[in-house]
Length: 194
Image (spheres, rainbow, N blue to C red):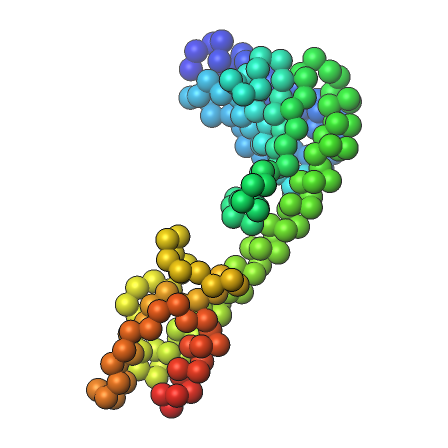
């Protein structure tokens, strides 16, 4: 790595550590910048919320930080909604920057995090419902054709819960392919085949 990039990343890390100390002792560096990259992006976290911090790039400019909420998956956001984000001047004191983060970013980021967690829980429950329905269908003679996971391009019901596709071969008398079943519909198929 070239020395100028190393120095830039080290300077940014010092600035971020000063901001974290103003935010409180629960904040820590979650992810350091990639030493092979010229970027200074890093993440900080308090164990509940993770913030991405970018600096010195074409979007922020040389003397600004862009600080935004980080989520592993942003599919819970509305189509035109962006992650909570602020841009702040690096020339301000760490105390002023921390106050800005606490006032302008964290409330919206926490609200989005609560929605993300609810969405992730709903997705996990939907996945479990699909797996349970598939297991029951297999027990009465159905076989999997393709994954029961949601398809990016396939049909999706309003609640996002469906089994992509199953093939029913029951007692050599019933042969059919079923698509886009909700767990309730799958249970009705199971009951009909019993």
